[in-house]
Image 1 (cartoon, rainbow over the protein chains, first blue to last red):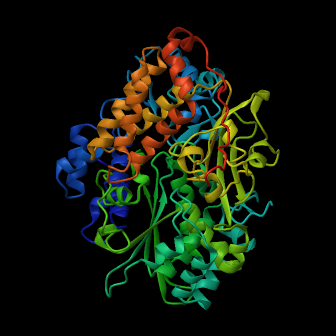
Image 2 (cartoon, each protein chain N blue to C red):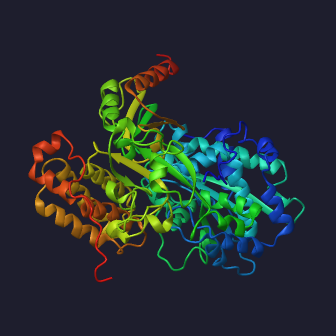
Image 3 (cartoon, rainbow over the protein chains, first blue to last red):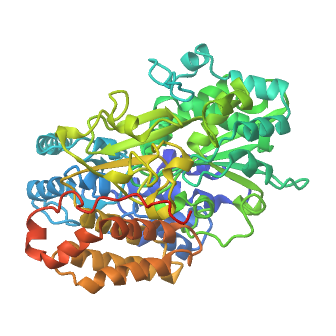
Length: 163
Length: 452
């Protein structure tokens, strides 16, 4: 993966927000950008590329990418359902929703559907406790989930992908 | 009792735009602060207001500001903690989504008071769409002369940047947050030195919660003395409470500190009472880290006094019979909820979020999770309960940062108040897999004052 011109400009803009010599501060935002550009996950080549852009060592990128739960170090579906399982979501039926998603997609946690479109993982509290149960999909939250809502989300994204 | 200082205008259509926010009286505090007050005068007002950090610890904000070292020629930083990750807490999200200019204005006022020319908002990675909301508000403020060089002709310069995290509860701890902002793993730093002396890039730094920074706006507008008149005792002003669980009206409420817990939970103005007419079993009043309170200790303290939504009243009785206001994450459990399962759930969370630096937390949270899983799944032994107690005791106070305490307290409180339910899981393993225990049978009896 290599960034296109727009993405490279964004990397420059991000790196300029810190004092001279502190461009490593841009690592998290640049990794987010790289993950999107690389199809929703980070492979070693992508991480090495990010390291070269920020003039830091490869290991400085690996140790960060492996620390934060939003960075996927294995391939995931084009649409990744990150389903909250913590306390307040748990008492509002998160377990049932997770079971329903598993059945609906026909894959286990961490696996990707055959068409490459979907996968899911259980995550810890996302800050939507009053609107439970919920999941994160890309940059947005889907809240007050029901099986019907899950069906609609899956249908909508199948259509989006042209299926 | 329904005074609102932060969210009073949050419902107005278009308030997220500069134009409407300004028309509704926004940026008056920034004008007042920059044009007619000195930085020390602003800090003095915040001190007088009695404002306490709204992120959870409750440390006086004005005092935190006054600790900031001011060596010549060294930049100072203000970092806004928008990492909001404590289970049960979603108030900062609401404020930033609905009324982002309030935070931007708060940052201008606070940065001026601290002499910071750069401020960073560190926002949890999952709040991705709010990054755009904040960046739009910042751009609008800049276009209107409230950010950038020589703001309002006063010679004060300020840039605000939004930094997105990537999923790590620990980054809500202020030194872990600074590490993360420097592009590293979120491992908390050993203190001292405190951030006020050596923070971001080794420079003096203040880290404040979103709500604390936003509160600087009404404080400057109304004066610290007037702000301090709202609330009760040392719990001054208003507080955003995130209400969730088995209640009729989950959501974010701005309350005047001093409201009774019963009114907050039962009245239609706030939580609207228990959902489906169920009975109240327990409540975690200040985010997952604070001790859970059984129903009989929630509305009244052990001494029979009315329990209030204040720092003092919620902690009345210490950990034996009290809890904490914390971050204001108010989670309500009805009679159908299982305390063992909930304790397992929270413990799994802390094990997942432990950064791994300190052995007591890294190893202890894992052991607690395993024991609680066993108890919750009908495989527990009676001695597991004592072992759990022993482990949490050995984590608390023995770690670099408060995550160890945060992981211990929920376990300790659950065993303290609901031991009979844990024991029932051991003695009735099959039944415990099929049904919940229900309300606790041993209702707390207030101690006599004999000997006092």
